[in-house]
Image 1 (cartoon, rainbow, N blue to C red):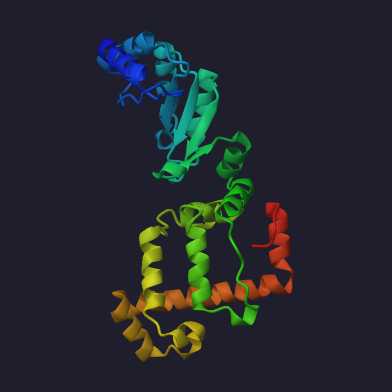
Image 2: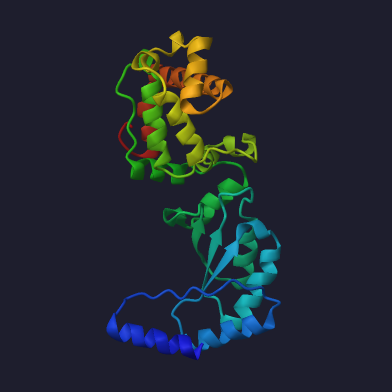
Length: 273
């Protein structure tokens, strides 16, 4: 701890910063030596904030962890991680109750932009399987998503690819689906819609001719086999993509008939996509 303090002071003397984050190594509350080191470091640095990072997958074990760390270093706030996993965040309730300290942020991915401000009402909705439309609306606005300009009957595979690329800007595809009320409980736990899956979709569509992308109805068995070979995928994956396209096309058509795009963005508090 003393060495860390000296090196920090020397660095700040040359390169001043308004904010300094000291990230300590992970440790268990039962490891007395490491807990003593942490307490000594907190005393040497006298930090303005002492933030405990809690794994949402820990469940009720988070209660004992939060209590032990609060007793040793005086926790001032919490960060809850892995909320994008199977856990719904019940650990947050335990840690918050034991320490009496606020939860500052929630981690929903391993990326830098996966750290979000924590809102207790939104977590409660997720725990109850009610989705999280407020966060979803914010992601839509931040990504500046746009709706297809074409008429519903003209929605083709190029439009589908563009929509998927835009949605990818919002983060994890599976996590976005979990924010929609009713879907969080219906989705399979092993749902895999990561960037690699989207890249395979892109490879399939780009392996088609312009005519095939404009008019998927001409995709017979022979064409689908050629596309699978060209994209390094399987015919089954090509078939699944076509089925997804048909469902997306039907949804777009249905929403357009009901004025859905306008009403959707009314819910999100913004302009049409």
